[in-house]
Length: 350
Image (tube, rainbow, N blue to C red; front, side):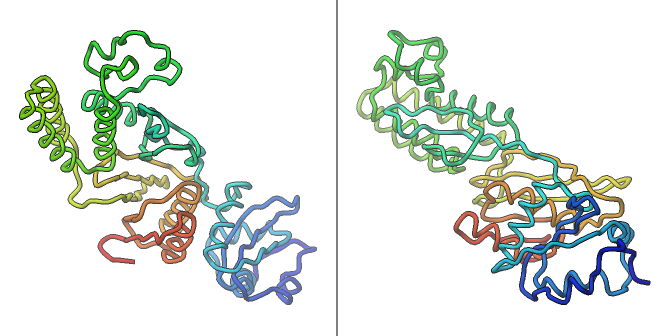
């Protein structure tokens, strides 16, 4: 039995002139609203599959009853089609698509490397900001916790530049050993830069290199009879080892995300764990909006497209189950950041 369509819509006429190239198709209702966006390797073959009398699931059958027109956009590659699909879903939030309702940008730690005495700060916004950005972190709380650890460990400043430039004496942060008071010259530029280098290595997940450098500088300070400075390095080593022992460390180095999906009573939850420099930054849960009877593969594909389509993906994404069009997704994400992104489903390499 052929699906019901509106009286003015003629699928055969539409398909007669449709291309076999890759692209995106939009299903429209009688009011011209986009109710579904799909990507196709072969537009004509994919759109024709809706109107050839084959059986469809309940969601597709319900959608086809309201289709009044189909608009297509041709692209050069499948990766371009995926990116266009992401943008159209984000713009229209179609009724029959899986939609990730999450427009919040993620927080980062910013290092203002253009300043003579760089500061560490909480940052949320475009990645085009000058300086170095580390993250993303799953929440503002996890960023502030890390900034607190960095301040204890390396005593680098976190104050605003306007506050820094108007100091005539050390502030309370110096008194409680959270800052070395570069604002009033109590530490040289070279010494301060070394502390910033240590903090940067820590943020990259290379704690072993930080430990080695601190040991070398402690021994150098002691041999030069600078015992107060040697004691500061010793205290930093103690705190660093304490943090290392209390953190969940991964067995491998590198930047990657782990994505899993679970369902109960028709509600799907997608969890993302963040690892940067081999160090766990925490996790975050999402509940994508979808129609009844949407499958897990459809949901995980839509989640990966919409989640990473709007932000920079790590080098590797580990997924709990196989993902439709995984290679095309990897190509799209790689094009956005200028490198090849890879993904793995379970223990199988993709």
